Image (cartoon, rainbow, N blue to C red; front, side, top):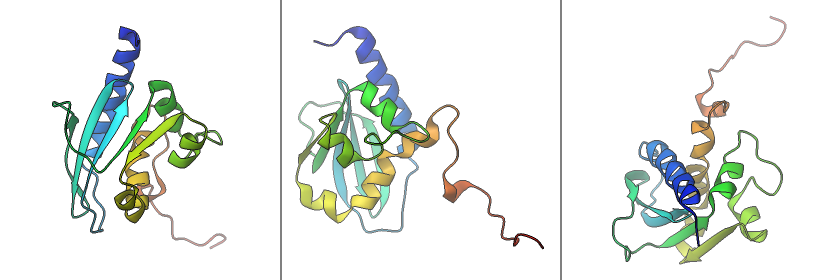
Length: 146
């Protein structure tokens, strides 16, 4: 049974994920319903045409989804470190070590794998002291030595 401290940690991580996921979009035809569970806090994410159209704590216990990811707060914290340690850097590495459970229909997950992996890693950008992703860093196109 989870303590209230663990539930609070899950709710805090869920809120952080919702805040960054709501603006996530890629030019990809991705239409999925997914559930991301942070300890006991489930977040339902709806994606239409490559854009997150809704991300919120699941209000109903029987929301339908295509696939789900479930992990404790400690796992999500380690996954969201600016540079995660080996074995904590990828959803399949987490699954292999037993820290993350993947449920549901794997076909839509595998068909949209890069989209989903990038979206789940958004928490790294929201982490205090995290470095911005390469996409968001200003480019310096000047050649060295000129």
